[in-house]
Length: 207
Image 1 (cartoon, rainbow, N blue to C red):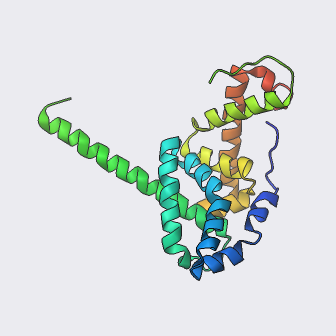
Image 2: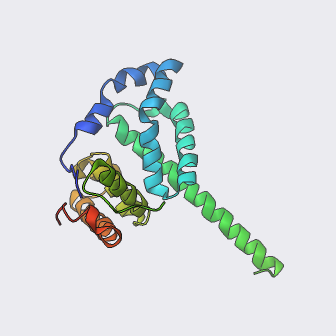
């Protein structure tokens, strides 16, 4: 697959540029600064939530919850870590809370039933054009949702967001070697599925 950037920090670093001033303004009660902060990180929060939940509706719910928590608890960010690292942990916590609520409701519903005695089509034609790359990206997005939670999370952070394995390890509480292991499995799985469905999209990208 093209575009792997294990050691490229440009995108995460760019996201941090100027963010300190926005945070300080938002913490001081500047609504405009908070709105700018939300605009800058909204898409990233959603993608993190989607990688964590694997469901677009759930990702929307998690994103909204993160924005609420961001507004309420931004004062808790003390600047000792990257803001994106802190924000990722907030997103991860919100996704975990959603999962726990869904699980609890499902168990209650099951108990209630037991107690009552009731039991996009991709066109593969054409050469390696921008359209081909767009189709490949669409397939990757589909197969990304079929990975395990951990593999999906690692692949999203490294290959789609540009974090280095060491940074991802710090965000997820894992050793970098473990991050690389999950990343290898995720890449292999996605490439195999793309190859099986549309081999012409990956035949030139190597192993």
